[in-house]
Amino acid sequence: MLALGLVLNTLGIGLFCWLIFALAVYALPFFVALSIGMLAFHGGAGVVGALLIGLASGALTLAVAQVALAVCRSRTLRIVIAAAFAVPAAIAGYHVVFALSQIGVPSLAWREAFACLGSVCIGGTAWTCLIVLAEARPLESAGVAENMPRPVLTAATHER
Image (tube, rainbow, N blue to C red; front, side):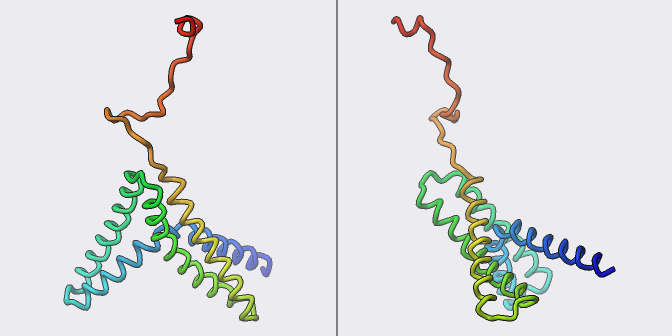
């Protein structure tokens, strides 16, 4: 029974860590949705209105960022957008790893070290997801991609 408990705890912590890495990109839209939802609630929108406004603002933040990354050709602007998403993910990663390390690490110095390492890993994961998966594709004036396969040159074209 003890072995089953250890295995299930390990699987649960592993699932939780996978979930943190998978959801790291969505930290900024979540923070925006929570902030605007709370602002709407305190402004008198009610619980349902604040929830709807918060969900809409978070979805709009994510959609605008994805469109901006897909359309933008400037590398500097793409880095700024990716950093705007990676920094909140790194902050959230720090706090999650710090909280999890309190379970089994008695030393405060080691908890801080693990939290900083987790912050770098989770922030780097969010950065990689945004930069690598949203590569801009240059377009020609007709809207066709430039990297289309070109015909192989034959001996007849070399002689001309």
